[in-house]
Image (cartoon, rainbow over all chains, first blue to last red):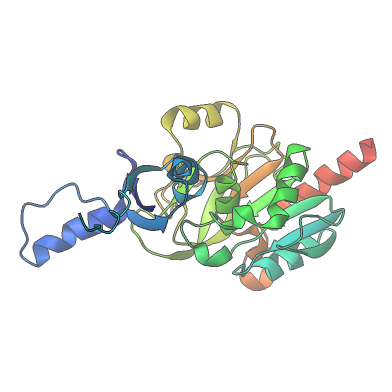
Length: 83
Length: 226
């Protein structure tokens, strides 16, 4: 199964990358952008998606400083067979 | 005292650490791929960019075979010193509380800093002259110490904040000017400044030597008791 893990800096933790991006956008004429947070996207294929939570806790994220969100994609539909 | 200095792929300060440890005892390199410590009395995890700092600084090094042995050694009370990347590895391995984040200003900082020994009674600071200041270099991008506020309160109350940047000297935005912390038992110590780069007059300061001399005093004391 294909899965995506989105890792973000925890709320309340200063994210200097996000701040730098937030400051850069107005220089290009993009106004009204706030709360920019820069995280990480990890794409993977797993046989047992139930293990994803443990993978995040133990390696993919550092739960002390990062939140994570697991998005699994439903398996591709079986090829249509003739009715 | 026999000191083992771990070398990971991407370590780069292991030779300076080896030279500094050699001033106070016998020192040897511990390869990352073997889960054993060759009977050393103390372990140093040096600075650098272990495993390219992939994912997060220290995140992959934590799973190196040698780290199994280091974790066991630490649990048995053996002294473990983590410098810079070594500090990051020890935090990722949960042998030390907290985590290290990108510097507040996102810049690589390479400069001499003044630090204050906040707890001069640990195995790594007992040879310091009380709460003295040390002039030691820092060089890092990911050195902003972070822990939740209640944890910071607890660390301060229990004397686990061993080293702080002097007023106005905080190079990275670390919480409460923390430059180095130790474990609850005191035998694991991580710091961002590089004491191994400050042991010879050639580089302007020998203040880092007291960290290594402290380890020797600690180990010699323990050996004498045994």
